[in-house]
Length: 354
Image (tube, rainbow, N blue to C red; front, top):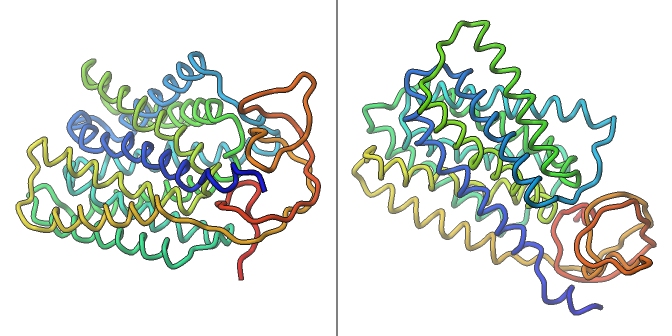
């Protein structure tokens, strides 16, 4: 067995990408709550995903991204992702944040991980072991502790909280649907998703006669979209390639803690011990994820497909003339293979566990 299979852990690499995605997204919630004050939720959603689309174009221009081309049969899935993840979710979030405040609203985003794990299990039967279940439980308890802390805030409201919860469910559905597009070009996916979502919400904003935002607020929301929605989504899709939807979504549960910390720094400070307790719960859950190892003997059946790959990963031994180094994408064939190594539920490891 090649040494690369023994030494490299896709769970650590994918977990790191998911962590960076969580940091990028989590920091935006309290900023959106402040910059979006007095702005219609549809307009806020449109600006966020316009920024995401523009940042994806810039990243694609600076650093070409590998990925399989988008198939004709996948356009309907992309449209559903755009409507749910770039239309419904940010609109509900913007409306909810204006009624809960940055800290309490950020805390409730923890539910996205719970919904994502459940939907991934229902849709793809992703194996969830005791370690992952324990990590998810700790993160959920951290979200509960932080929510208890946020309830005492003067900005907290039941309807606003329900709206944020609805946003997390919409994004969990988005995450689950996106799994089938994780092997496609992430720059293209983010660009199209952002453009479609921004267009739909902006048209609705005009239809409902929402007022135009001030230039400064518009720039802040565009910047939030570029980092928290564009860059974060690209990192999220790359993480899904390596560790699947459930694990990526569960690590992404760190995002609410990041947002709550920034909200606290902005002055929204519920004064009790719940914040410290939640921090310890989140940290423990994150360590469990990043140190997870999943290894057993498994079989790869013969198949032919197109996705980003390398020739030093122990699964791609086809030849190129001249030789090609690094990650690239093209149609290729795999012969039957049986081996044992660390792996995650990526495109090559979606086998069923007893």
